[in-house]
Length: 214
Image 1 (spheres, helix red, strand yellow):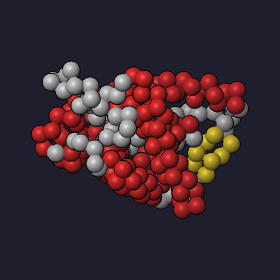
Image 2 (spheres, helix red, strand yellow; image 1 turned 30 degrees about the horizontal axis):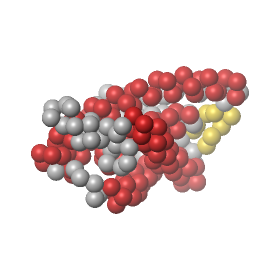
Image 3 (cartoon, rainbow, N blue to C red; image 1 turned 135 degrees about the vertical axis):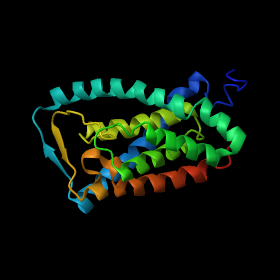
């Protein structure tokens, strides 16, 4: 019990449900990331080019990157989709809580490299999306999986994550342009294509989870 909230209130599903929730979250994170990146190729002229190195270099680097992104995603989910969201939702309702915490989530990334107004708006939109995912089966574990799935997919394909670049062997991602469409140096999160992917996925998850108690 935390601040008189039970584990069920906090949507910390039993540990035996964590793997299933995390796996569901991975799908919910990977799909919009692939949509945003996939649309950037025909609509923004983005390209995936051959880089130096091969599979022998690629997979160890991806594994090391995942080990960095995995705990980072969990910490952010605990901060932004943990006790705070439950407490605010109880006090003010789910939507005001999601909006308030999504704004804080966006501001937490304002010092990242190459931030743009649209990039910060999209990060806020991602915060709302992850807040919706938090109410899906699996609770915090599902939100953690979605957060990690989004970040890891972008990184694995050599795209910047919220402005943070990753040196990935084998693949070189060229974002094309214009940057307001594809995100440019900030990564897909800085572009309108990511906005479209997030809006579609948020609508789908909202329709799925809206009957859950706030």
